[in-house]
Each structure stands twice: as C-alpha cells, then as structure tokens.
Amino acid sequence: MHKNTNKSLDEYIVNDHDANHYLYECAIVAFILLIAYGLSVAELIPNWIVFIIISVTLPRWVINVHELLHIKSSKEMNEIIRCLAISPIPLSLFTLSYQQNHEIHLAHHRHSATESDPDAYHIRGNLFLVILNSFITPEQSFIRWVKINGISFQLGIDLLIKLLIFIILAFLGGQRFLWFWLFLRIVYGLGDIVFFRLVHHQKGEYGTFAMKIPNIIETWGGIIFGSTVIQATIHHDVHHKHPRIAAHNLAEARPYVINCPSN
Ligand SMILES: [Zn+2]
Ligand SMILES: [Zn+2]
Image (cartoon, rainbow, N blue to C red; front, top):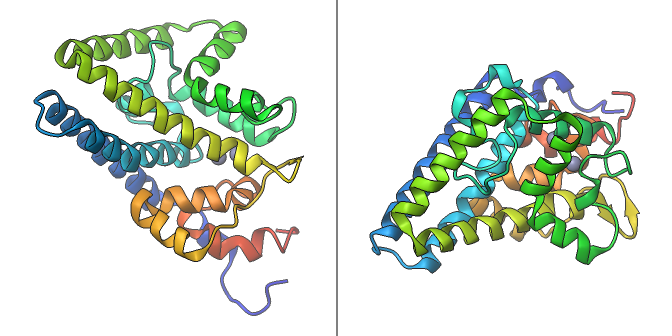
C-alpha cells in the first residue's frame, strides 16, 4: 500500500485543462503540417525536412487524439477533429471518423490484445504480417468497421470532406503531395507498430506492458516527440489499468495503479 504519500489517485485524473491542452496541441500540429506542405509545394524546403517535420508533429496529433478519446465523446469533440480523427491530413480515401475510432478504442481497452480486440490484427500473430497491417491500419479499420456497421450518413459526409481535402492538396502539390502523403503514412505506420504491437506483445506473451527504455532516450524522446507521446507509450500498462489518468501523470501514478491493484 502507498502509505508514504498523501496524494490520492483522483489527483492524477485527466481534467479540462489537460483536454484543452490536447486540443491546442492538435491545432498547432495541423497548422505546422499545412505550413510545411505549403513550403514544400513552393519548393522552399527539401523533402527530408518535410519528413522530419512530419516525424515530430504527426505522433503528437495521434497521441493527443488518443488522450481525447478517453475524455470526450464524438458529440463533445470539435468538428475538425471529429471529422479528421487520426490525422489532420487525410491518410487515405477510406478512414473512419472520431466516433468510430472512439468505439474501436474503447473495445481495444475492454479486450486488450485478445482475439476479441478489434486491434488484434495489428497486435497478434506473425510479426511480418503485423508490421504490414500496421501500415494499412487506416484502411483495415475502415473496412472492418463498415463490414459490421455499414456507412452512416455522417461517416459518408466526413469521407466526402476528406476526399475534397485530398483532391485540393494533391492538385496544389502534384508530386510533392505524393511524397508528403508517403511520409505521413510511414510515420503513422511506425507509430502504430510501437503503440500496438510493442506495448501489447512482449517476450512471446500478449498483454499490456510497460516499455522500459533508458532515461536518456526517455528525455530525448520527450523533447523530440513530446512528453505525452513518450509517457502514454512507455506507461501503456498504467494507461490500460486506469485510462482516465492524464498521460503526464502516468509515471507518478504507477505505484498506485500497478502495485496497488485494490485501487
Ligand atoms: Zn493499448
Ligand atoms: Zn487508450
């Protein structure tokens, strides 16, 4: 038991301030990505800089949206994230909106890494297949959802909006868009491998695990990708035990949640 501290678990729970911070970071990421795309189309920055910008910004969007999934329902979400969900720049012509991602993610929490987990296809089984699946999660999750639930009116509208954004960006950038899109997909796919396979499969076992990384990597990872990305990943076991704990509190809350299962 945690006798040496007066803090209660409630103090680690995500609050409105955190939610606003996640929304704010998403807005910044979207803004930076659009600027980067504009500079790339104007041939003011080379592709390798575009890749670096995407590498340090897109994971922030993805994790901030993930944190929001545990705070806000689709109805409470702002319209832009509600429609775009997994990326500010559409990753595909076939992606789900916030509402479907919300339902899928809550099911992932209920059935983590089991056969019933809707994310099992990019967690369980042959590593090569899992990696392959991780790079096509946007389409896979879309097809898997539609097979069971069909396409609602709102999802259809959201798809049209994303198609329009896709067409405008491709029209403006031509070949530059192809590179931009490819970089987005690579970064998203790599992040997906870490956030699903690596935290839910360790030493031949399926479950939900912490990722033990050297302090120096944790520090630099936090500087490069943002502490929310790093904390939510390396303390994924704490997150699954108590999804309402704010990402920045996961490390501190670990003794309460993992070593004190009665809580
Ligand atoms: Zn998980
Ligand atoms: Zn989660």
